[in-house]
Image 1 (tube, helix red, strand yellow):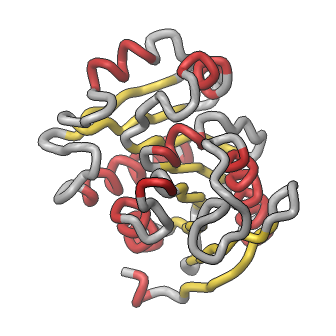
Image 2: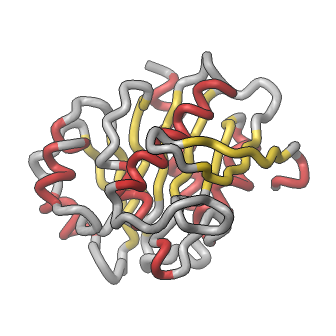
Length: 215
């Protein structure tokens, strides 16, 4: 839980000059760093949304530094919603901040829903792997995501709810069949919001990161 770790509030600045609000936890002896990207701003998504919050609380207990932030136009973050285009710059800004705070740690990006799709459009060389939770694979055109992360040889884990309302596991497997180094894992009994299954999501992320660190 976050009560066991010091949570820092901070700001990060995008390449187009916007200031974004963020929070950071770095546990003692952190093994890796994870940037968390929240769901759709126009549907109430923010950095305190369910899955983002649960990962922010739980990952430090597994020795993982966690940074969550509000996309442009959300909370006290400057700017306005830009339908996944400007938000890609927000993710890079969060990576910038995490790289300064934890410069020696392998860095992973984990988004939920809108945040998952948007993160898959970001090909920053500092990313070790993408850990995408319930990616709709339609926030940005699928062909664009396929040409971005899909064509990148770095690992991609897609954690897909069995009963996802936007992209179920079978559809996700079909949509990403040509993607490089991509694994789709279904979460039994879950829908797009992972209610009652966030612990399973966290466990899958930790297991995936552990596997990458062991290489």
